Image (tube, rainbow, N blue to C red; front, side, top):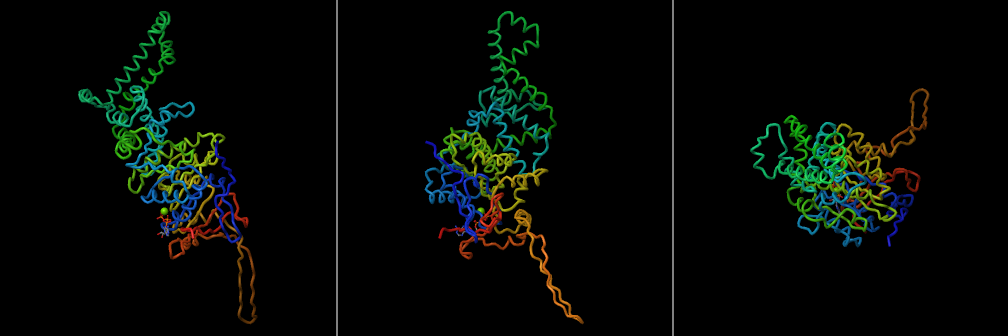
Length: 502
Ligand SMILES: Nc1ncnc2c1ncn2[C@@H]1O[C@H](COP(=O)(O)OP(=O)(O)OP(=O)(O)O)[C@@H](O)[C@H]1O
Ligand SMILES: [Mg+2]
């Protein structure tokens, strides 16, 4: 029997001077964003609280890692909440693997082809990676050219072998025809583009020969006389011939004739990413072995942790986690909530590393897919730097707008503090004027007027408690809840998070 999860189940009672305020599963699936300067208590204060409450409530989830100590922190959280049996760690030397190409090939979404499915995954990761390095992801020319290269490489692989592997994709991209390719060199290279291309050609030819055998004498003669008719028959009964034609056109006309500079930029975007995948430990964990774990395991309460912390594995650690996240998000969105309503969490400390271009879109539907996001980052400029491109201001603001609860810890970042202060809003404050005249006519007056002012001024954020023994393990944070009020009717409150349970 399916476990029932009531959206009104209370997960946290935020204490405040006026009593408590409830944070329910419904609030959890509207998303949480935590900001705070270095050492302000994000991870050990509020982050830990949400992690433990979600574990205690039986959520499944995906945990990203940026720092090396996060795996141990999660083992502790799981122990404390009796969930250690549900924790699956994907890590070098561990028993688990996830083969993304195999998974995506068997996981068609709606009507879209396997190629389209895989292209979406690859281009999202490559673009996220380029955005982070201030690349060209906003330029429609590069985007389209890169998409076309990924598309045609994958289709060629599918036509030749019926499936794609990272090695084949890499070999095709590295040996695709160039303007001045030496034909002898090509002949000697059996792993090269021409080898795969010949194999695809043979498969397509075989399909056409079979079709010709099956056509009646009348149909055959009509095909010979009427090119349009023959093309129509081919399109209907041997669709790979059309695909092969367009692959041929792409590699031998469009791609081959690109200027060297343009071509090398596109080629490096794709091959650079594939190259990173081909190296261990990522290759063994995500490309070569059969999957022992899939995103859907979260529906039965599994907690998947990818232990390839960005601080240790750098670009490839980030790429692979963004890729897993994107595949995971799509899998979570496909779920039928009526059949399985278990909430799942997406937990990312140092979340700026794991952002991609569709995040705002996914976040907007996370509530209905019961995805409880917890993103933790130092400040808003972190997001600008990683959600790069021309519209970063708009992208970041709209993304933050999709997260229902925001927590602001001690911070010295002016932009984040100003954002927090603006979000909390303004109120009419008493403005007392005192006047005193000393002279002939002695008079002393006091008049009260009201002035619209920030309820919490940006200058108040740097001084909050940041935990540790000196602060009695107390971490302060302003909690702002969109459309939800605390007991006194306001949408924000200063809360104390404890690093240690007393
Ligand atoms: N379990 C703990 N018990 C007591 N103090 C702790 C604990 N964990 C961290 N601290 C201390 O509390 C403070 C806040 O630490 P924490 O790691 O939560 O900050 P953070 O906001 O996540 O910082 P960063 O941006 O560096 O990740 C630090 O001074 C840290 O040394
Ligand atoms: Mg931290």
